[in-house]
Amino acid sequence: MRKIITLSLVAAALAVSACNTVAGVGRDVSAAGSAVSSGAERAKH
Image 1 (tube, one colour):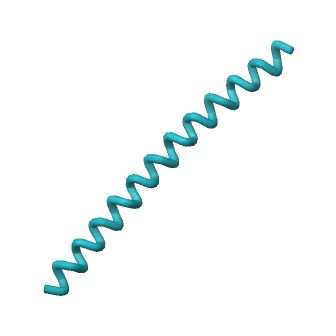
Image 2 (cartoon, one colour; image 1 turned 120 degrees about the vertical axis):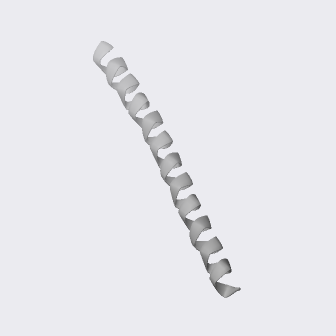
């Protein structure tokens, strides 16, 4: 029983850290897309 609880806590900690990592990647990709869009707008004018 103790082993199951320990493994569950470790799995939960990994899941939370993975969500934070994915959110960070999403912000980076969004920032890169904004930079490309603004560059395209400036090149148009």
